[in-house]
Length: 298
Image: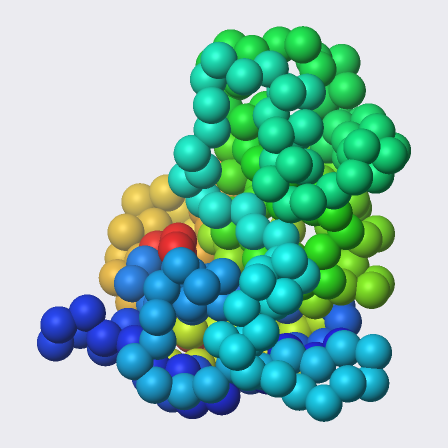
């Protein structure tokens, strides 16, 4: 299966949200990273046909078939999609189970398919203990997991996930991350997230967007290599922290419990101080290297 996105552009008035976005996706997990206003949500809404692009083309092929324009495929393409929006419209008076059955009906699943899939999916997202609870009584994290559950109903070939782990505690984030990894072997999964560690070890490719333009696109390990030798741990006195922040890009501040000194994680091309030592970079370091102090989001 291959989803080809070719020269997609979209403007809102004078604001160019996407500028000739081009990517080819096959089975596996892709992460879409970028600060607020980078165009991530615009792209997702175009892919799910909730928004029309100004120009460009999206084609899809599976099972050895010739690629087709997704607009020409219409309902046939939408049937292959599972979408988890960041701000879903849930029904507070529906129970968890009723909502899943309702979404199954909308997706055209048979009764047999629904009876098999719903319990399995609810168990996978750790909602199998609250099937009769009304959605309005769920916590934010539970609603987030329910939104993911409806997205994977029907075993879609393409999953579009907008902030899938937002609002989850660390244990739930790991469970959801592992679940997404498990089902991604035979799917195209595109994840937009601001929680960089959640995709660092599961994404086969990272697409970094800035003001609607792809500024980098590579597997995580290749991106991280680009700043190898440029991440430092710098011990300093507490009184020197502000001066260090003024001089360098500081990505983390901690304290050495043995010495009482402050330990700064610093991005710098050359050794920032005589006592600095290099450490292995992370994807979060590279994100900050590319986007500076801009906060990430959709």
